[in-house]
Amino acid sequence: MKEKVVLITGGSKGIGRKTVEEFSRKGYTVIMNYRKNDGFVENLVSDLAHQYTNTIIPIKGDISVPEECEQMVEEIWRKVESVDILIHNAGPYVKERKSFADYSPEEWNYIVNGNLNSVFYLSRLVIPKMREKRWGRIITFGYDRVESAPGWIYRSAFAAAKAGLASFTKTISIEEAHNGITANMVCPGDIVGEWKEREISSAKEHQDPNTPIGRPGTGEDLARVISFLCQEESDFITGSIIPVTGGKDVLGKVFHQ
Image (tube, rainbow, N blue to C red; front, side):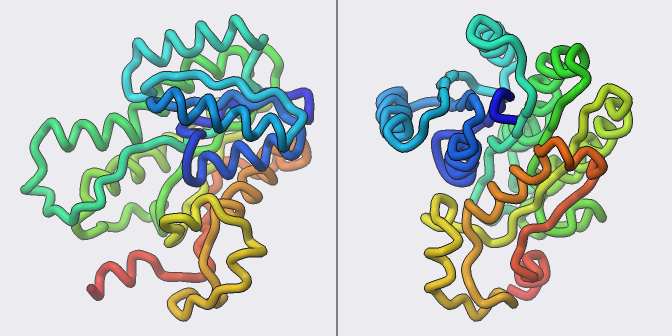
């Protein structure tokens, strides 16, 4: 597994960064996609190089733009032969609570394009090499109970995109199963702020009365689940929607606000 290459979109911050660290710790070659802040990313790669012995390759590009996805993949093929694991972490989220009627077409398309279409743009370019090797892992991100396509008040564009992505992830899992490719979705709970880049050990020292297990969720919680799904022996798990919420009813909390 250490010889395999993993591409993580939005890998410079938050849960994406923690996932980069998890795969680096295990010795994978990591391609870290980012969209901006070249200086920050350069320093981050330098810092990670002092902590881990694997190869980390930063690749700049906006995954919501088809042409940039093509440019990214062309650059990737100049550096590695193939991508074995594709983790679609990046996706825009608007914190402002807005009714669907308050979205402009431009705002709606920005959210849907960045969370749904981008997965198509990039996957179609990477999967052919997986087919050649008859092995691959694809991970997407959803939200609590997304597989049932629930309404999410004031998050209409994001919820619609992720519900569509849940269906798309399951479709990939069926269509590509005979090629040795699995596709699964992970659904974070309330993992917010600095906890996205924190460790489980740190979270165990803090109380969170709003989460049934009693502690905050962390980026490491997600990264560990993703790592498990990408193992050789996890090939029987595909088309799954996996909540990582600490037992919290995330949408139920929203409905009662």
